[in-house]
Image (cartoon, rainbow, N blue to C red; front, side):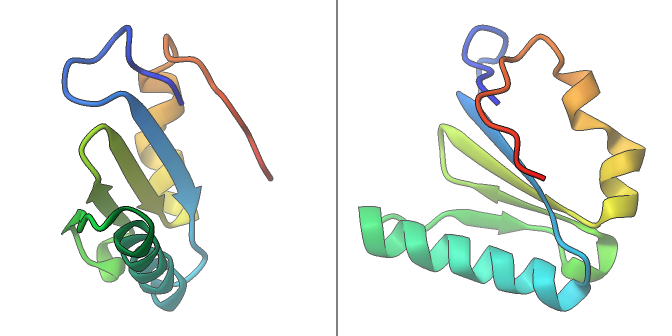
Length: 90
């Protein structure tokens, strides 16, 4: 989601689901390692899988990893509806 025109702290949100605590952790680990390998940059991780929401801060890009229940509860897509959806996969 492109939020450059409506946010001062980030340019993009990436919002994903993970169906288990193990999957959320694996997604976070893969994202951190992939960004480090490609850009020599370590992101910052906030949250723990058991809470159902992990946030990875890569500076201009914020990755949100949700359990399906937490994603439905927080509805970030609705809160940031003025942002432009660049890609939606299901």
